[in-house]
Length: 276
Ligand SMILES: [Zn+2]
Image (cartoon, rainbow, N blue to C red):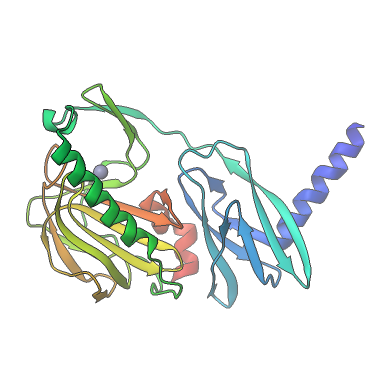
């Protein structure tokens, strides 16, 4: 029986190695690059259809898992040469801390109907922008860190607001003073540039194509408008303290096909080797 298990385990591992290389290994709330070693024609990763691009002459795709994903494997099913093949890829459980924040009472108090309506309307506007994905890839090469400053709050922290409201920090906070510049992390289309939302404040959403998006919150100035095409490193606006904040900073988020992932993942050395 033991011998049987050992053989099965080695066969599965071999199959994965022959099909795909995962850079770095999958983890909840993180992004990985899949490098296909077989000429696959279409792939489904968990519940998402993967979008291919070519790096260094090799077929690749980005894959990400939700912050809340708790299984130890994720299924990749691909069609190749008229056959379909499915592999279980290992998932490393990411550990996220819990922190407590104090914010102005107006953000946690029971909200009057007019404010609730405003928040709902703003949320719908953001959701509509996020749902409108460009099929073509806009980004090229390495990504651009939107501002050269300290990380004041990492991605994925579980937050308690005044000990009451619970949420996950789905972005990375970069320090800054009101008026400091913010740059686009890659080429893309401005899916939304909108001022003074209750929670995110003044914000920009950029669609980089093939399911990749970046979001910039709490801005004091918007230098782009909805529909603009922007270039990597282009000035898109300035740091501010609009919306639900404890002080001026940039809240920067990245999404792949609806999953928030740690923006720092795009700057890992093992990924940069492929992008440059
Ligand atoms: Zn933040």
